[in-house]
Image 1: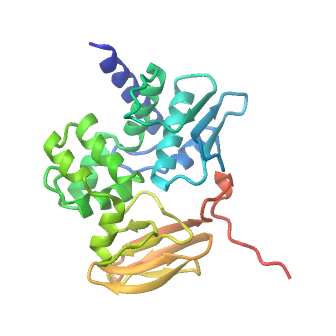
Image 2: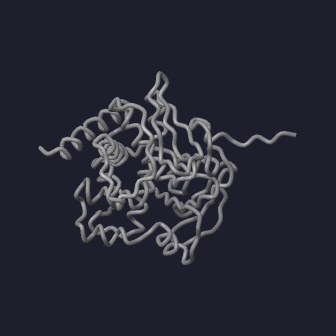
Image 3: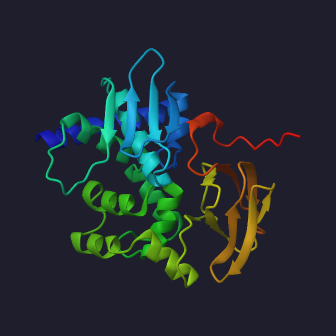
Length: 286
């Protein structure tokens, strides 16, 4: 067994142990911020543009996440920092990393990345995500892969890379084809025009965790879906479903005519502060 294989085995064992500790089923998608809280690690969002995340090892451990990074990247960064916590690493500052820079990463950083991928996207959860949607990762188109990434709570390219490099579920050629697409191009293919807002595709196979969005995000929901509460507003009825937009922080609920339902949690855009307060409703004072 070479060093990389040893790191991967260690990361997989620890990730599965953490999932079991927080009572996540093998096929569940998880919210990593909630998981950190369950493990006694406080997560805070802060405006530091040069940083992905930071782990502070202390009596009351803390993870800092850059508030202006995309949601999928924030979750992966949090899982990475949680890896440092799980392995007993010391305080770490993880700056923005360019994979094309030629920089050789330390083993503990590689291990934390592996841990993050396997915590958020274990094979059982990925297999389940594609299976219940009657999809095959080897043939799924970019929009279908994007749907799966939304449910897992990761970025589109992160899922594509994980399918190829970690799970060996798609070939190099298939990975290159899927990875050519960007979330912006996928949004344009759905809407027929360019849009800068983030898009979360929510289908009736979404289960196990709330839908997490930030103010301004677009949510493509199953046909006929309605929302309870003032937190999301209907914007349009499309061929693919009904389009809503997150408009104010708080916790609401989606429900479709078929009986499917899911909670939605809306946070402020680029929220700064403790993660446990990110969904608090805005209070108006006289």
